[in-house]
Image (cartoon, rainbow, N blue to C red; front, side):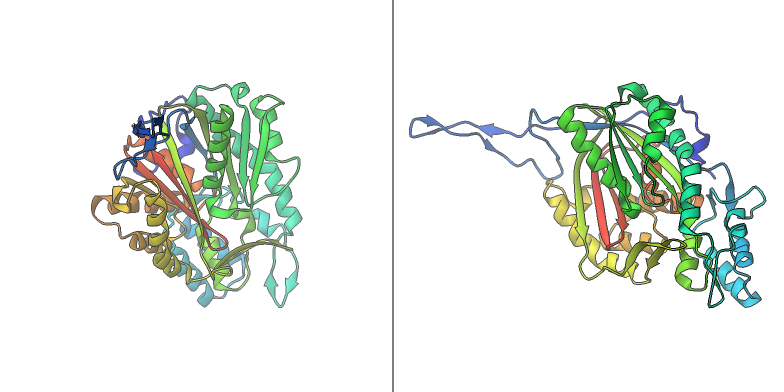
Length: 419
């Protein structure tokens, strides 16, 4: 696995050394106007320099922790299991194997998989038949499985993040939970308070059903809380995407089954002027794209729509959006040192890279991070960005970093971080 070893095997005692962000105060001139002192005139910082006004509290990303289910499944094995569960003909089995092979995924961690490679959760829930299609477990069965397995995975990620930040659970003032693959109340956030031994007065926020960009929504919420209150915020993203595999005819279901995986990521934000600084966030709802990507509750799990037109739409739209957002921070696309691009699939990665017109070493680093994460972990939805941030921080990367992820709508979320 080379550089991209399983994050769950790393020691929780390893300290993440975060680079210090350089900040520059806005300059002000004081003059006179008719004998009266004029208000300070703030000069815009030079291009490529991001600054915040003096006295404005900033938040620091202190640590990132990750966790995955214990069973690692080879992509060839999951392809064979998909063919078996759907009772595919020899011709269809070859088509499934070909699509899985082209997904860019070599292995991933699935909570529904057994050591033998089979998926008893789907085999044991025969579901109902509709025009010969196997619909699988009901949504209520999948939600019960989520309640059973998601808290433990979330706990492992949070425990690592807190340990690396050297912060006790009792010191956390706010908890932000992100998930789009399970719904319950009391939910994972309640369980985390109990399992971690957090204060019963901790303030909770749940960000649900936002899809793959949920981690950036969580970071933006935590950043606002930390800056406004001076509190320590724990963000946890946990997804069990494999619960919603749909073993029924149709290329859309096969594509999702081939790409998605399970995992949890957590991070600690504190008010500080040192470490990895969260500088800015951006959002874009791409027009006329409502049905390009969707995530809806069905009777037999959550159902995804992912059209083949998504990579092209992103390639045409991403550059103008990101450039206009960065200009508000006195930056250009060329000023960014590191790109964390959510690996929604090989064509999506390439579409975004081409749309940003990245080249040279900058593109090579972005490709390595995105395709490496996809290869060894698959698309874990919201935690994936945190896995990539963890890898970036562990590599001792420096400079301005942009995180990009996309979700239903079609919508995009972005974060600007100085590491």
